[in-house]
Image 1 (cartoon, rainbow, N blue to C red):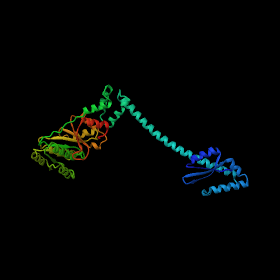
Image 2 (cartoon, rainbow, N blue to C red):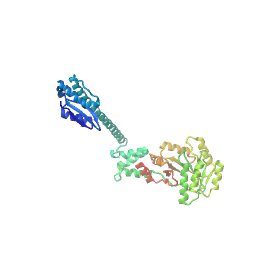
Image 3 (tube, rainbow, N blue to C red):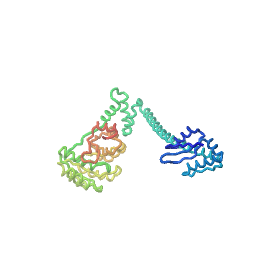
Image 4 (cartoon, rainbow, N blue to C red):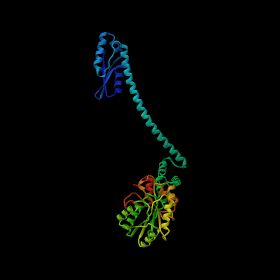
Length: 390
């Protein structure tokens, strides 16, 4: 019997060589790991049967097999030639089955990957089809722009107005149309500065009133050359005075604290030759007691400007509730904060189309005074269409 040795990196390639060399009826005699390779001994089935048919042949076979397989402790009963041949075939079939299982596993992984990709394509097609149905006349190549505006949470009615214009536009591209309409929709304005007339900043807890006041105070002092004073009536929040004092010291602006409406009135009268910024206590829109306290401070002065601060990532309904609750008078302007923390910017447009209140500034970080920008409609349109502030 002629034993043939086959060496390879994996069993699959070795089995292929065995079949090609010895045929489908080849018998695996032994296999072992040699370094990084696998070594297999194989022979033709008829040669195995023939070889074990004589005593000398049986001894030769036993001797050769024992030498080759001693490390794996494989032994054969030389008196059972049929079983020995069958055993070799079983080894061969087991190795073949292992390879089939591995191949099936790989196929299953590829099928699962393909299924996920098909699901994503299906969702995209359904989303596109739904959009095309919702907006008559919308072309398929404009769906991407529509989805971008939806992701930015721009008001649906305004998006429809944009696409009504797109369907009849003959010169401008869809993006150009959207840029132009968003730019025109943004309602912006300037903060009105008048000596002795307090500018009162209100808004929910954590909206950034204190840092915004510090930024604006620094800008007005540095670039407008006007004297500014800060008055804090935030007597509720622990550490509020310390924080504002730090900011006031940074920009070298005097800070005053009023704990009662009477003290507040006296300070306003004493600071009538300065621009007065008033820092108020943050409150939940549902906190009637805190908002009532704020109103009691404002009733003792003749006039003031009211600025509402709102985080830009809020939805329109939430922003409207804040404005309604903090409007102890009609607001003179809105500042949108935490733009650097947001993923959506549709509130710029939504407030502009539903309210007749100008947007004054947006804040983009904690640095004083760098991280504040005057509202620029074109800049806002660019942010919304790109989905980022950079």
